[in-house]
Length: 207
Ligand SMILES: [Zn+2]
Image: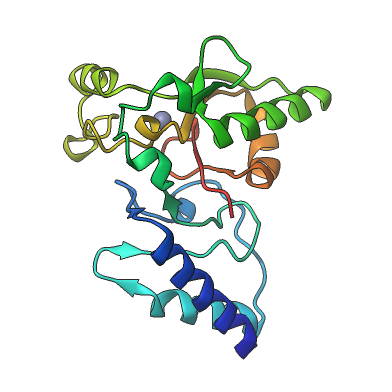
């Protein structure tokens, strides 16, 4: 069990040294307000994990190591340095890739992972529709003007703060079967439902 905690702490230290972490605009763990399946594990490992997680909380940024790959458990949003250098909403075409649906694009790794997920879903008879993916800074400004800011009860992140601006989030069009499939499988591809009350929004947070 101690080895498990040390591994978590090492992973956290690694993440901290790798890159800046972005605190979500909404609560990090939406499980209490949405229909996530609550993990049933009640072992002492779960207690140790919870202890280790609370021990890594500093200031307003909570790092959550993606130790357990299950719906509702995910890693911190880490913006890779190669994206940070461009700035949110300023990612050049060369660092973006098609996700294989319409004209939508994500940053390269997220796009590749999405294409695989989309293909696997399709093979299972599931259609994953897409409403939005990468969003430029100008598009974020426009969206905030139309939909209002989260901080004021609206549906848009502050321009320059959206994970869409890093090419690391998608807004999907899912029927109930597709929503269920995503909740069961998306984490295997690094996509997690990480904004409370937005079941369509999936962030790319690979373990
Ligand atoms: Zn979104």
